[in-house]
Length: 123
Length: 260
Length: 83
Image (cartoon, rainbow over all chains, first blue to last red; front, side):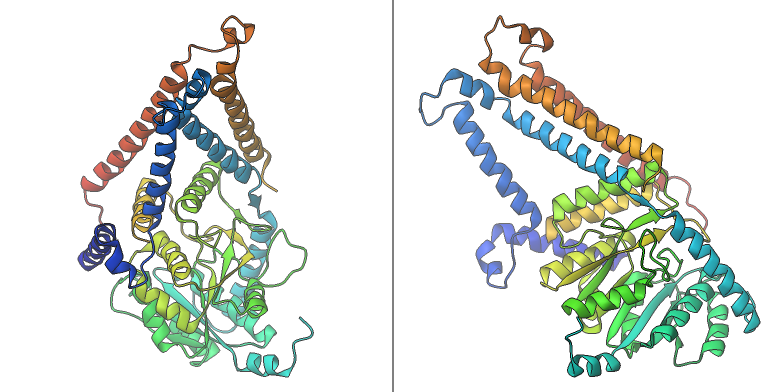
């Protein structure tokens, strides 16, 4: 168990190193981890949001635009939540119940038991 | 498919399939799964061997395995017991070293995967042949059975279990974007050298181990094929999904999220 | 071919999330373009709640996850199970 933990720690350290020295490790063919991809995407969105909601570029955006932009982080979160719920719900509703498979398996098990007993297996 | 000519067929005839069965207290299930495997392989004519890696089960699984060896022969049922419970990853490594096949099947020894007949499917082909055929079709590095796609499914799961499993699968798909729909299933066919490379890179256990293998496969750019399967939950013994399983799954997921 | 109950719950979830999404979209995206004295305004809370409510929900979710994890950890720590 401890060696497993140690290995994991090593991995964690190496991913930390990737953040600190991306260039050096990139030479080894290390790609961005999924966490970094997410952080990158989220910070990109955050910048766009800040620019619009607070009109940081002084583009004189109409007030309604800014009113819509301001709750956008919450809106994206809620949308993502709704999307997740819908997908999970749909997949639960369409998850096949394999009644027939279980019936057939039971049949095979009976057959197997009889045959194995004939062949001299002591269960 | 029919246009494939002799080189393909002569290669087929040299293919050998090794089934790795890591067991722990599977005294009830082991004879049944071996019986099903032997029956199917004999019918289909593929060359095969079954390697049982028992981790010193106190219920006498090894004893049953020895009887099976006497019935089916030492070349078909190979025993590679270990002295104590050492975990799934090392069990596979241990088994691969002894394997003489160029392809390796991995499955649970608990009959969860209903080897013989796919349900909810009109053509009654055994899964083993479906996986083998899929592999040949695209020369895939690994072929994974999936409960979550097409005619795949489960038996014996209540609503709570379905919700959790679908939720966990959705979260995993979102965070890790793997090339496979079923990450925690354990009915898969690998090219031998591919499995060897993958297992050496994996360090987690249980559910997470199966997930990590697929993620590493994506990292190493291996090709993955999928076949819908029906999953009949444990016939003997119980499969647990409690708080512990959920938390350790989440831990493994986050770790893979941060490191791969 | 899921059982009836599972199908009902699943499609119920889908319907609920679609409704929620539609309502919230109107609230956040459409309402700012509508005049302040339009009847539509009657059906929505003041604007600041469109951020406060999801915030509260998110906090509750985090709290739930947090307590779940601590509960599991706590159970693991107390009496060692004999295997």
